[in-house]
Structure formats: C-alpha cells, structure tokens
Length: 267
Image (cartoon, rainbow, N blue to C red):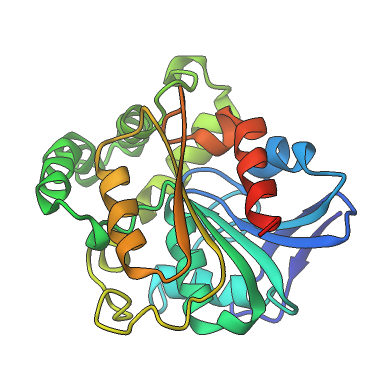
C-alpha cells in the first residue's frame, strides 16, 4: 500500500511491505527511496509489516523547502509514523535519522538497527573522518561547480561498492540521484557534530532497547569506527558484520541482514 502523510509541513510519501504481525519502520539512505527496502522486506514477509517513507527530496516526497534543519524535518516525518512500539531500522543517513527518533521517543522503539550509520561524530578514530573529507573534495567541487550529475556520480562511486556502476544504472535512477545530491552538504551539521549530546556522559542512557550496529566487511573504514564509538555509548548494543558486503549491504545482502534482524528480535 502506498500513501502520503499530509499533516506534516511537507507531506512525505509512505509505502508498506507485507502484512506480518510485527510492525517495523525503516528509513532509507541518501540518494535512494523507500523502495530500497523491498528486498529485505521480502525476506521477512512472514514476520513483519514494514513501513518506509521517502526522505524529503527523495523518491515521491517533495523537495525540502530549506526551512529548519534537513535531518530534523525527516526525524519529524519518521516520528509521525511511530505511533506504537515498533522495530526501527535506518541505513546510512537514514540511520542517523532513526537514531534521533529513538532518542526522542525511546518508549516507542522496541529495537533499533543502525545499518552503516554515517554519524561521523561518533568515530573512534577521527583521522578516518578527516580522510573521508579529503576524498569528498571532488564531489564537493562538482556540486559547487554546478554539475550535480557529476557530483552524484562521484558520491555514488564513493559509497556503492559492489553495486552497479553509474553508466549501468537506469536513467530514472541516475536522475533521482542527481535530484537528491544537493541535500548532502546540508546533512553535515547532523553527522559531523553531536548536536543531541548522545556522546556526552549519560547522553544515551534512554536507549536501553536492543541495538544492532551492522556494517559490511568491505565498507569504508570510517563506518566500523563509527559503530565502535556507538557500541561504547549504547547500553544494550552489539555489532554484526556481513562478509562480502559494502556500504549498500541492506540492498546487496538482504538475506544476511534479515538473519541478523531475526536474531535481534529473538532477544
């Protein structure tokens, strides 16, 4: 079922997968859309009803109106769907949205799964964040130079290890990624700084639900460092690594991710 949630300042597009008894809410990564959860949902159809929404400037949701903060606006959209205790999943930037949702409404989050979270402020080794910033420069230069298609191609190359290369992507997919690329710099305040104080002493005390920190074995080295930093802060967390997978692990390895979720939910 597809629908739009219209009571927000900007309605977001929502879709549901499955009709299982366990309600799950999922937040996709930058440059993707809610349909990215289709493969994972198919692995869990016997168990879950998975609800996902398109971030602003993604999929069928409207372009962000540049009012307020980009992450905050998407957190608000997610919280509008968190109407009962649910299992919450986020991938990449979507994982940072999910983390903020859990901080604001922990009583409604039955479990929290952060897949390849790009909350770089939590990295155990800050030098890896510096290295990533240097690797980002060609992408930033292309974006500032008025070439969003090149910027999207470079960004995709950085993060889509094992996924189809840019020329092999369908034109609608390339166009959607080019549309969304302009929001990436606006994510920086939320991922490079600890605005909510989660990393401060006691900042994560409310997150007592089971937490799964998941990444691919072949991802960018900064991601395991982020997960290590989060593991040190979260009181009930564990790390899982999917062999042979990169940053897009939830799309490329849905069966393996589903197995980790089943183990988490059995806790």
